[in-house]
Structures are given as structure tokens and as C-alpha cells.
Length: 151
Image (cartoon, rainbow, N blue to C red; front, top):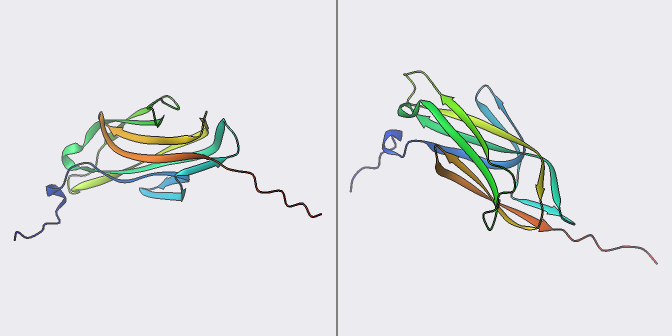
């Protein structure tokens, strides 16, 4: 039996370490702070407008991957119809030669995210045209609490 190796050089290069939908996120000198991750939004009626949330991502790049990269995030329904236009950006990954790899934090703040109907949705992350991660998001109907009037 061959010994198991823990070196990153034998693993697939770029690695998504964190990809979450949350209430809020910050990046403080390379430290990714995430508050309140979730996968379900409940509402009594449609359209559902979620006031504010964030998509927090931490991707680790290897030395060979230093340079320019394209990042794309999409939010789509179960039929593949986009809920909002794709969010695209470029990033430049650079770090000292003495480091074998380096994490890159990305935070996408979303205001007034609107869903026309209840259902299952997906949040997808693509880097350089290749899908790297996906999150389910469930937008559910929330029944009002029963009327508790005392007679």
C-alpha cells in the first residue's frame, strides 16, 4: 500500500475553501469573517425581496496560478433562468515566491435580491469559465401563524 501524501502539489490546483450565502461578510487583512449562513428564505407572498445578503468566497491559488483570472457568479432558478444578470469581475492573484499557495477572499454584497416565485434556485461560481462551486437556495412560502384571539 502506497503511503498517503498530504502535499498540496499532488492535489488539484485552485481550491474553493469557502462558498456560502450569508447575512454579512467582511475581509480583514486576509481573514474572512462570515455571519449567519443560510440556504432558505421564507416569505408569505411573491415576489420575495430579500433586503440584504452576501456571497462569501475563499479560493486558494497555487504558485502556478498567479496572474489574471475571471470570476462569474450566477443565480438561477431550477429551469436555468437567471434571477439577476451574471456578476462578473476580474482579479489579479499575486503573492511572494516563498509561499506555496495563497487564499483570495471575495465578498459579493447583494441588495434587494428579488425572486418572482417560490422554488429551488442555485448560486454558481465559475472561475476562468469552469464551474467551481454551487449552492442550493430554497425560497419557500411561509404560512402566517394561526390567529390566536381569545374568545
